[in-house]
Image (cartoon, rainbow, N blue to C red; front, side):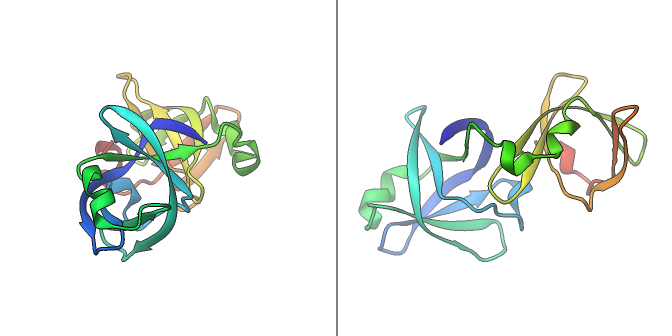
Length: 172
């Protein structure tokens, strides 16, 4: 398990009940698309601290409830309110990203023929692959790698034409 500060799941906004669950307000790009997570890192006093997940509950809105292993009361998790929650990545993701790592170095073009950037990395969030794209301005943009977004692939020119939902690139 490795800490990846680039994959912000959300922020803990409150405790939930008395059994140690917390409520996380999700980042926009995870709405309706929660990856399978076994562990996360909480940013506590500026440092990443790993936590293993005992239970998750997602209602389909912008809130996700997590319960951590060995944290059985609201008193134990109350100090985590306000903490940012980051997904973990395994250092070896070749099995789950096999085939898609060939997109590294591809230019990403949207339906308006605008250059979004170049794929610098494929990230496996255990349920959803993300393309880490470096924009021409040097900004990193995370875009889900989903077949519904791909209009065409030109392997010779190394170009991916994507049809992205409005505002997706602005929320990063």
